[in-house]
Amino acid sequence: MSERRYDPTHGEWVTFATHRQDRTYKPSAAACPLCPTVPGHEPTEIPREHFDVVVFDNRFPSLSTDPPEPSVAGTDLVPVEPAYGHCEVVVFTDDHDATLASVGVARVTLLVETWARRVADLGADPGVRYVLPFENKGEAVGVTLHHPHGQIYAYPDVPPRPARELAAGRRHHERTGHCVFCDVVAAEAGGAREVVAGEHFVAAVPPWARFPYEVDIWSREHVPSLPELSADARADLARVLAKVLATCDAWFGFSTSYLLGIHAAPTDGTDRDVAHLHLEICPPHRGGGKLKYLAGSETFGGAFLTDVAPEVAAARLREAAGRAVVPA
Image 1 (cartoon, rainbow, N blue to C red):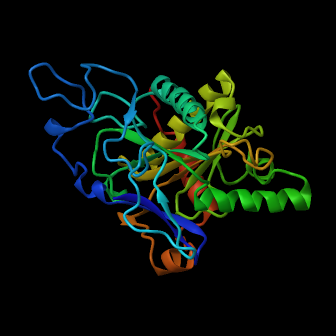
Image 2: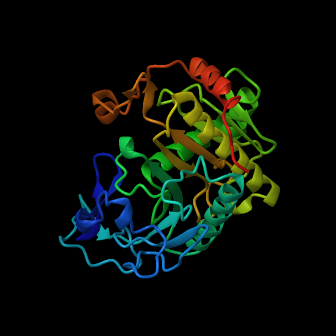
Image 3: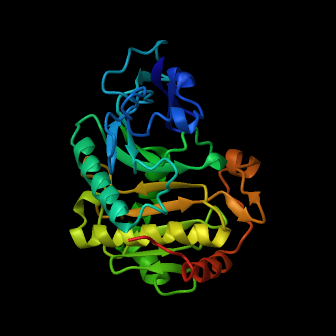
């Protein structure tokens, strides 16, 4: 079963992919499907002894280019449609014990280049409207494969959170004539909540941070999507991203779990005046060995409650940035 059902009470599509119940779950390092294939051993997903960055189709996709027909008939109230789209796996390194914070700026630069290429290629599919690269890292966010990797989903519509973000951007633009993120960058760059400053990108704890140590990375220029970045800007994004991840590890004192997502313009050419390239990095940690869980207010109200003031979090992270070591 793989299909999308429309929720008329929220105006959102929900995807059902029941075959994902059988996906690989916390294998041992010796049985990791994302490690290189070693001669004399069982082949993995990657038929090479060594590699830098690898992209391949997810074996357990939520969306596919050849989805089955829905298992139930839709109605006027609750339409049902095949789960069309793309789901790709991006493996960051052949080192099972590495992290994106430890692989070095050169490798992160290659990853940014890979993201940009895949966004362009997947976005060229006329059945796709939004491409979302992301990484789920660490058991604290439910990861079941520990080898450093991320994913790219290409959706047939704009998912709910980016859609709300774009709608807010349109309202701001109609009221002020400005891109809301351009205004945010002008207000936050060099301020009390800035964490890492680059030439083309700036990282800060946003004043509305939903997680205690959330860090957002915003393009200084109004650039709608990754493929439109210059080579210099992509390299700068890699440096800033690597520094932010190393900073989080330095502050918490361990390899930090987090959710990382890249928001950009829809791939059909719409909303380019309000879509502004940015990354969101949300560690669930709140200090003292405690985790930030999504509880009743967040889950049912959509209203986030945070435990650390953004200004305090940013000051702590800036101090840790001075100690953070980022490999070249």
